[in-house]
Image 1 (tube, rainbow, N blue to C red):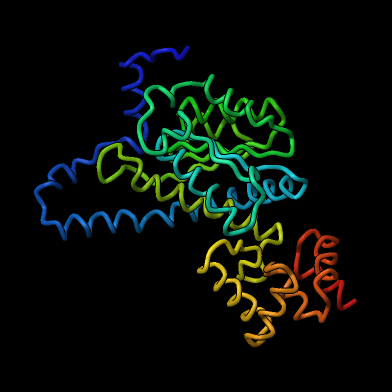
Image 2 (tube, rainbow, N blue to C red):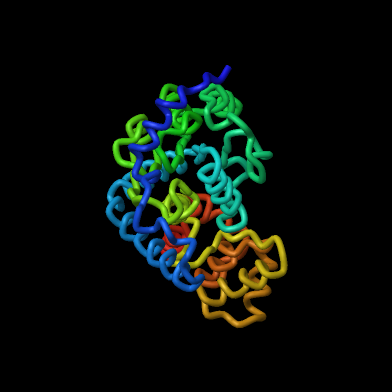
Length: 311
């Protein structure tokens, strides 16, 4: 059962959150010309990267910890409600085509399940039990990481997910947009991006949502860089599942090797369309099976495989 919070206590709690603060200077925003509102909103958005920059050391420490566990076969799990949950699901869903992650390697949990991606599921965000059940369904291990995401930093679903994951020995990260949040306090790595009051009072899909998106981009992307999913700034583990991505695969091989179209086609054919393997065959002058072996021995890191081939 989900307990019903005291409305007065909840109101008092919200009034103390910077993301919920009322801005008298914007009280007549609805009377402004559209262009002026757009300029105001753009100026508000421009403050978000600076707020993220203040927490880069904490973000980097969390990434290194996540990458170390994922290198041992662990999973990256996002857990949140509403906009925060949707952002986690979005980030998780983009990892397979971008980095060829295995099914279930990066997971997005949203309070209320898939239905909550497109509609409100009443009471889901207030359920600690639901968070525990969702995580138990994944059979967490100490190699896994759970990232709780909540603008307020007090959402019961996100806080409970982090607390439960920590009890199970998983690495925990708490991403919030208010200082002194229960979510950050519950996690081993607390990241609080304080973006201040929103243009529309309490609408945390705005600056807070942007901040969360920026940090999630960093968590997944830099972790994948650390795991050898890139070669320089090239996505060499891209999954060529459609014509656009197949064209991108050829371009990546060309940028990495300088080879001509015919050479690239032969290399991709010899390696079953695997971009990383094709690059290795061209740069190291090895055949497809040798490229596959070298990459396996190097843990999928192309630079290390090239060094082994040269050695």
